[in-house]
Image (cartoon, rainbow, N blue to C red):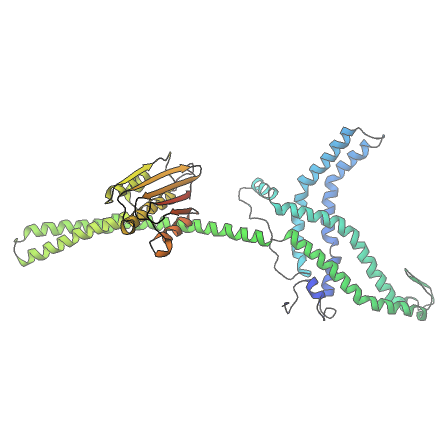
Length: 447
């Protein structure tokens, strides 16, 4: 179903009230103002290429120049167009995106990326490597060639229609009027020409709107951000926001760990010591001694649970000694025999290291709860720019993320770092869980 309000001149042409709307005048204004961007493009290009034109003229003045001279001059001309053309095309494209609103009311977004900071060289490098810049240069070439050819024709058509309509007034003094299609010496003789001009007015309005609409469609296709580019830009922004969220989560995790370790854990340790001293000062079988003893045992149990909580948030050994040592400690506390093989030439970034550790921790927990395994193994390696973690167990198999075994949450956590998780778990086993995390060991670790 068409929109109740046309957005472009091409859409407006198909409406019944086109001639009574503003679109004929907007289309006419768009075509007539095309002389402005043409002047903006032609003037600097003419000034910059004039030395090349002079050199070509001098080379051909005394007869046919050598083939090498012609080749050199042609190459020089191409270098001028490729090297200087984008500097002319970029401001012209900005002007054309603003002028496009005359025949296209839809929003027009630039296809250029935000240039990096650091001065003119990063800006030039960014612009000269973008496809949008070369599309703008192609549009400039079309504008200079096609518009220069069509604009005089449009102007001549308007003068012809205006002359036909005004011919009775022009022939009023008895002077014959020469029109392109004939002559008229009196107002009566010029009347058929005026009627023809009035008949051609609406036809001309439709013709100009089609021409302006086609020009606008070409401008939008070459100068505006397309659907694919918009999706790519949105994906880039999603990736950046995801990276910011991962960084914020990591910073908040470190803050909670520090507060628990240096604050609550130290105060609880002091309380446990005070209860132990108070227990020694009381008679062994007194009611107060039993109450203090119970409080002392509860404080020690709470101390153990708090240590486990801190270790679950982020184990200290992972921060101090790295991923292989942390996985080794995790395997030592596991009730089944776990073989750990870790070969890393350097430490991964913090967020990758933390994700790999919790993948192993969650996988071993799942093995305990669901697999019935008697042994497991963990292999950590680095292949190119990918950190690989593989957990193998000899259990019953049949692991399925749809059964709520924690695998879905594990896959989500891996996806946050742009990694992927692979699972092989046939009925009867064994089960192999492999996680691949993008990771460059040459990147500096954020502390």
